[in-house]
Image (cartoon, rainbow, N blue to C red; front, side, top):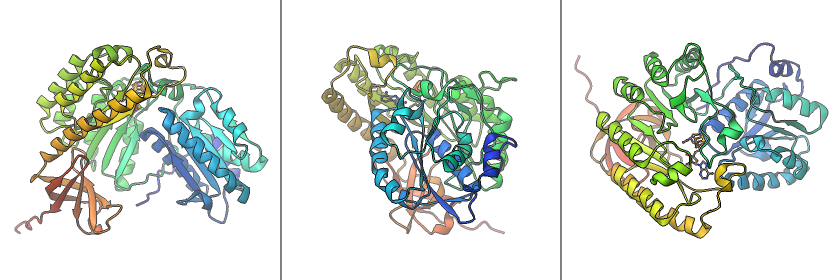
Length: 474
Ligand code: SAH
Ligand code: SF4
């Protein structure tokens, strides 16, 4: 289900002026756009903003680049794999541009913020029309206008100037669940990670702006909200007056119509007792937490600049579980960080066994230019990384299967998201704890809460049957 986003461009911004004057962009014939997004939820949200701006210019989405007059690649550079995919896809656009020279091709996102990358793309793929970065993507209508007018390549990659733009229209994919960014950037400088270099310093949105957005979304029918940031626990830094993340959670919980609240990502060094208390107290905050551990070895955690030890992480997990017994805990783990010995890796395996994660996102360490870990001498050979990765996946899949098996025979409230992709007679939805549940049912139940008895489970999802609730007596 598609929903129009809030229709709020900041009056007088260059983007709006370009939008008003752009005859080519404001076409009487509907034009089509295609956006391909790599990477995290923040990138997805940026793409929703680009889609929102394009729709305001009269463009409509299409499912294939061949049919689009505007193609945008929103890139990620957290790992090398994501970058390689972008280059592969850009190469494939050459033929398309030869056949449709009027099509505008734009490349944006985190890769562009890396020194020299955007310039190299314009040179190596001369049919790319626009390159722009992560700061000031709200000016996209202006870039598009200029590209259409001049026929020249546009390069708009800027340094972080500390500003935040509010009010850009967002076209969200789901009409039920909304991701709401509460802060941008990251100040942590984990030694393997490029995010602070490409997304800039931490900047929090005001709680008023966040709450206004959520209220407007409730009006449109949204019921589930995921608050997003690279480290939501340091939300509020620099805000006048200061509002902590726990306070923000409590305010969101009070918004009438909000049914489920999720949030990510947490940093184990910053999550505090107040956030855990808010989870306990607030009825709409779900029993789910994403706590990336990255490694089970304190020695490697120190080299990663994570600022917590294995013991501190385990004690945090103990505390969360003691207060929220049914909580689902997920994590991120990097395998093969420089200097990781077999003994260090064993510590990661044993931490996973001890915690019993509900889900773990596992990554092969990927060397990133200009990060401290890139310069570390003792890089782990690729074959060793892969071999460890496979062993880790086995352990985390087993624990996910065990955690899911505990749901067997339980009745869970499922927020129905719609028919499952491959089976139109099967509905898919989620438990409060974020587990995917598939069960037979009619599409008309989309958007409702349904009691479902769990009848089968595996490592990745649950299956069940809707139970009929007897009608209440008059
Ligand atoms: N801010 C979030 C997520 C950042 S990126 C956090 O701190 O948890 C998402 C995940 O990608 C990270 O948690 C980490 O596990 C992984 N990652 C980041 N850089 C990486 C790299 N160079 N190689 C492999 N995995 C990486
Ligand atoms: Fe990267 Fe660490 Fe910031 Fe997460 S907290 S974005 S891993 S630097």
